[in-house]
Image (cartoon, rainbow, N blue to C red; front, side, top):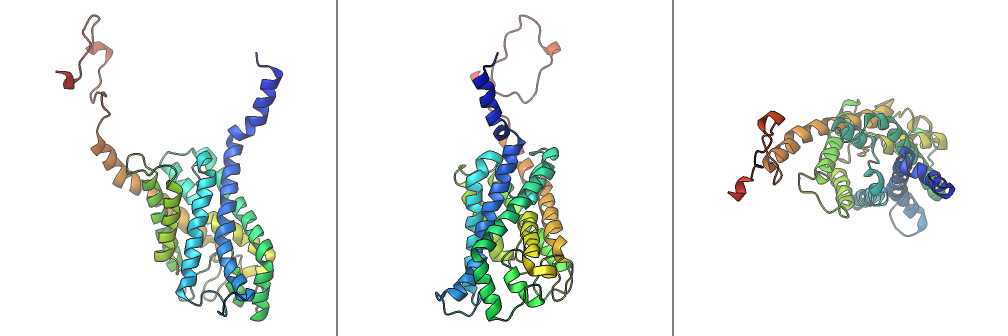
Length: 319
């Protein structure tokens, strides 16, 4: 019979050992992701008014884009380092969906993980706003920009994504999000597959960060490489509350209206496609080429195949 102290100890540990502990990890991982991902964009607005640069605004040169992509790289990296030991650090509904399709994650937890991820991103955006609100307002005032008006998409982009003005409909950005997230999920599945060439566990977060860096460098300009429904939707809703209005939600831009669903649906499709492509196109081949483990029979025996007193079969290597 458990003592009173043992029962109390189990009670204190209970939520940490339950799904609630996992949801907290996903929430906190997404919080870190946005604090440093959106934070690097906000820092560009701060540089403009800080007197530490002669540029008249962010993205005046290609090096600014490199700064953003590396900032997101390290945001992902350290988010995975912090919570990866608890849940594996999905920190992305598209990855959660892909893992569920691959039967490596229970379907009954998918919705709760998604909710925790979106909420973590929302709170992360709130902290970035708290830290950088003065810098954002200074830029808007200097350029005579009014929040909620079309021109405010510049500072709104601190928090969430928008399509490039050369798109006249959502098809291009949707394809962009599907492709970018497809490669994200595909590479994550490869890096973490024990049958492939898995890295040491303490290096996996760094490689996942480099995956995001590569996608930002190769597929970033079209739509801001959200490649994560929570990363876009949570901060988008915060930006709506903070005053960016229809620019944030539903996402009305120069040639495209009601854009908000594209960085949600596109990444989910990309993650869902990557799951069977990796499992059937790569993992199945790896497993077939690996063969049986040493000492494991490829052909099993039934009870009828053996009679009492029969000698134990010997491994062929012992003949």
